[in-house]
Amino acid sequence: MRFFQKYLELILTSIGLLICLLLITMIPGVNENKWYIITLVSLVIASIHGLIFFLVRHRERKLRKQVILEATHMLKDRVNNLMFIIINGSNTGDPELEAQAEQSLKEIQSILEALSLESIQSWKDHYGYK
Image (cartoon, rainbow, N blue to C red):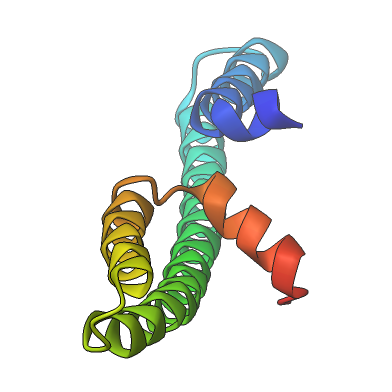
């Protein structure tokens, strides 16, 4: 299935060209009707290709939007948790809490640097987010 998705444009274009070539060989003679039929078939094939490509791009846009939304939720949750530790630990004068606050700041930076689809999936699995 991945192969088909990866090479969708090439596969559909090849199929369309094969259909046109078959029509050229199947319709006997060289007359105006033959080229008229082949032109109409080519237009239908091109219209189908355009519709399929539109639907694929629309689906990909929708998936990207969903991934961005999930990343936003994940970041908001993780950063809010770490900021709570920083706010509560930095003003107490306790060296252990201040060290935790410093560690939380470093963790926020590493989270932002390591953001990927895998980290989004692990966050979803951990929190049961759908």
